Image (tube, rainbow, N blue to C red):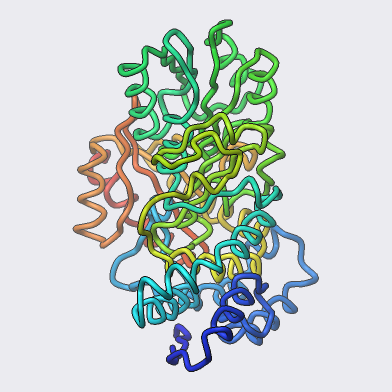
Length: 444
């Protein structure tokens, strides 16, 4: 059973509320003033002790340990959600944190939002920076990867004739943004293509390099391709791009909170991500990282007085926003850190491998994702002969109540399957059995 927390009305004086907010934002998972500690400390410490002698791969397959993590979620048993690559549910403690801050906000919105809750953003910025391995002065808190990346794409000082090199499998809204700049400003938007999965780093880097010319100013890289889960060698591509005088924009929507890395290690200049995917933060939260010496040159997406300020906060001028959602990020970080990013990565790779190896030999079934951990993790994509992506989606949902994601990409039609840490092996067995029955019906 899921463990719920009773949300009590705030009774403390205003100064105590400010202090509480700052302490909550700075709190680690097992510090006494975090909601995570109140809900999970005793049980999770016991679970951690039980696997402390195991290596990462053994822990990834220890169902007793992961059952403790799974109890931290309140997901519906009626629908099996395998589209966590789109948006993941927040753990219960995150939901309760949002409810708590929302209750406070509604006691007097304009006061509590801008004079109480707003004081929690700087501690939150510091907590995100620690997770990202960078300076807090490079982190802007926003609503999603699309918003962060659009801030960069529309803010870059590009002029007519300047070239941008991306990929045909980048995120749709990102490609649309570059095309808008192409139509409006006369930039040249070029795209490379791959026959995924690709397991040759040098070949990937060379493909981007061959598309570049002396006019190339930006190389755009999707860290984890959203359609089929291919992990791209960002650092190697970035080093090559910099050697040719180009800057590098990285779409990290599907990598942050999933893969074990620090943003500066990618050697990129700009990085946008959604926090409501694998970090499991409140839905509608995101983060933008801009290398410190690049901030001043990028125009903010929304206008303000100091357009060329070197202060990262200029990218947070979004008008009225949800402060409760933003402050709930802190408890999501607590939940995430209590598991550990390396442990989470290994578990999700194990889950992807678990289902994909079981459908691989089925007649008419084709996988579009590498089985190797350096080229894939949580996301896998599959197609079944005789079904369009939409037909397969309809069959999975209508017959088996399994929710997933259709992909109709450039020359690739497939189905994206993305479990998360709350997904059980029994859930994946249910999916495997469904694919087996559907494939047999069309490919007897």
